[in-house]
Length: 103
Image (cartoon, rainbow, N blue to C red):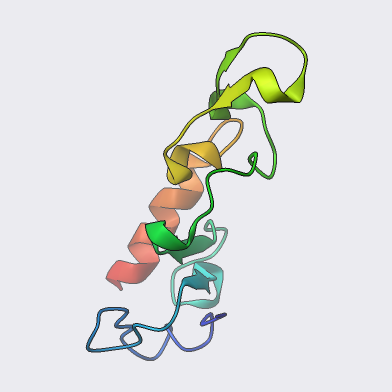
């Protein structure tokens, strides 16, 4: 569910008291006050993530080990937050997103 406009004016509750039926939420902090040039946020339930599929963009820290060039012999990081974050993280964008939520 895209709640980019909702979270800039409302509190988002994904607990069992709020919206328990939602598996994934994407937020665009750049639409919030003070969120200019911030990184987008994807929040998801761990049980809704299928780790049997390869990462969307394999590379960087997503690969744990490569035994051979065959795709069946590449071991990926099991933790979803690490597995789906290839390359160098946008640390300034993360910091700006956090500040936008604080405002």
